[in-house]
Amino acid sequence: MMTTTKGLEGIVATQSSISSIIDDQLTYVGYKIDDLAENSSFEEVVFLLWNLRLPNKSELDQFKAELAANMELPEPVIDHLRSYDLSTVHPMAALRTAVSILGLYDDEADVMDQAANKRKALRLQAKIATIVTAFARIRQGKDPVKPKKELGFAANFLYMLNGEEPKDVEEEAINKALVLHADHELNASTFTARVCVATLSDVYSGVTAAIGALKGPIHGGANERVMEMLMEIGEEENAIPYIKEKIANKEKIMGMGHRVYKNGDPRAKHLKHMSKELTKLTGQTKWYNMSIKIEEFIKEEKGLPANVDFYSASVYHSLDIENDLFTPIFAMSRVSGWLAHILEQYDNNRLIRPRAEYVGPENQEYVAIENR
Ligand SMILES: CC(=O)SCCNC(=O)CCNC(=O)[C@H](O)C(C)(C)COP(=O)(O)OP(=O)(O)OC[C@H]1O[C@@H](n2cnc3c(N)ncnc32)[C@H](O)[C@@H]1OP(=O)(O)O
Ligand SMILES: O=C([O-])CC(=O)C(=O)O
Image (spheres, rainbow, N blue to C red):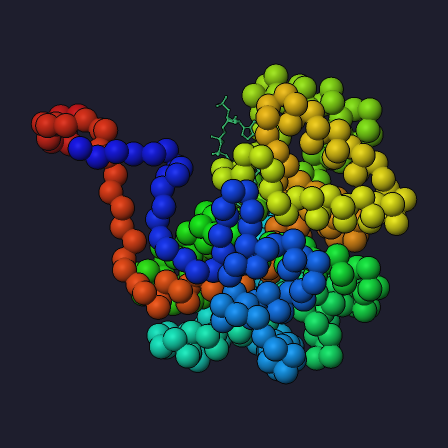
């Protein structure tokens, strides 16, 4: 007798040493997300996820230098980005395709030993922000900006996006957002990556598949939709009537609810705080004010907490980033977690192949096509 759980809710599908959610607390390798968000650079977190320990100063300096040295894209990948229909292609589709193409220019793409997999992980992590920013600039009719070796990952992202070095407050906001999004146990995109590479397929295939999963509006794609919703609402006084109507129409409110967190997403408070501070700086407090109204109303009405995607929307908007780049920013961070899980999967692999309970018709008589 087979039992099924819709959406695999509550099923423990693997063991992992990378991140945990226990009693609504998120840790990376046992370190509390609050401590990492307050103290860590994104690069330090990536090192932690891949090595299961924090780096010392010289290890971190070397890791940062290696990432910075690997950021530039092969020219054919940039040419490919230029060839897309720039008026319609979504940046997540561009990213998914470009990562796949990047694999064609990696001599070790199909070399399966773990040392080679780690080298590929570094090259891919290093290049992901370069892809996102190159595409963002190309579609604005601008040339991509080459990364600067002396800048960290967060600063390089903003530099390559805008063509000028960011202010400290901007770099800090992106760094913290990247730290908060880096890993999250067996979320849908990470599971996708693990399922893919458990067939002993390659790192690029695993990450390409994961980007496809993250793109969906009820996973990473929610942050873009949150900002669209806030823009549609327009002014604070419209927020509650708008939400009431959505609920009456049984529509989901983007950025609200979570499969695992029922009492609140521990990452949301950091993004909420950043949203408050950044909207104050830009003089656009309405986005924050609207967001808290919606959060309180949905909590009261439906008992649902805000998730990581909710306040990240007004944070990125305050940094003058286009809405459809929000999910690619999520991907730039989460690729570190995907890669950690891919390496862990290879380390102790078994094909992931669950069963389905058949509920279709049985014992059907085959009828020749001319008689149907
Ligand atoms: C990084 C991330 O992926 S975080 C999640 C990002 N996604 C979003 O923000 C999209 C909106 N949220 C959702 O769609 C869901 O809350 C999910 C997918 C995140 C988690 O959902 P699940 O655990 O599968 O819950 P499910 O979708 O089955 O919803 C359970 C009930 O809560 C309701 N519900 C869940 N989320 C919401 C929401 N955001 N707005 C309104 N109602 C909701 C559902 O309609 C359903 O109600 P019903 O039982 O009356 O039919
Ligand atoms: O864990 C999940 O289901 C979704 C999520 O919050 C994430 O991927 O960060």
